[in-house]
Picture (cartoon, rainbow, N blue to C red):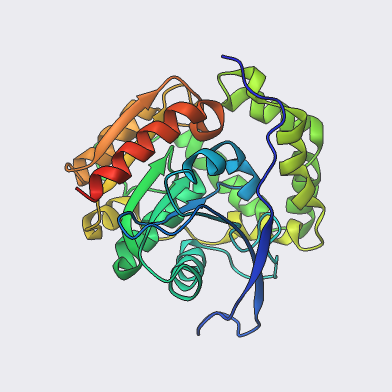
Length: 305
């Protein structure tokens, strides 16, 4: 498939987020973009990027979706052009950030659209701050499920390796060295080429969009904190709490997850969801944007009928 090599991002602006206790009281600058006009007959969309990405990762979606919807995209605290304070980062932090943004800036419930880590953050809002949500769309969503004893045979090698990695990440020097490696443009490109099915979608622009925020002074500590902080609420618990409509979009060629297997788990705990499987990798919204935009638009329009 031919992918445009240069798509301009919509210019954005900043909102000052004053987090509530128990989070630190300092105001934090949060970057966001807005496109499209308010529609009284349709809810607004709030696009939420994944780990290491930013609002720029939605550049192929914002322009098209804004022709029919009021569209917002936001940089999670610690990523993109948003502030990168030395905090403990977790789903709870991003849940509270997104809830405050919807309340203070958007001003009405939104359809939350999240990729990977952003999907987990969107689900946290949908389940635990339902007054902010008109619907939830998860694209190759991250997040842990509860391990049900007896359903899978434990892998002792993986368990030991996982323990070693967690211990290593407690060391500042180790996490800093790893960060310096993974933030290199060459490493970013290699990683993207592994998780994108369509290699033509891995452009210099995309690599630069991910590299640029890693140069910010607080970026190394954000990277370390994400891996050090205990996992948040389990996905199955959140799905049990979720009352809003749910759309799942899966890139079947994602090497990081077994999309069909993971999709079945979501369906087990939330059988009323709608789902589609696409020929793409971990970021279908960037790899097959026309398909994602069409499926998303049709589903959101159906919420108003």
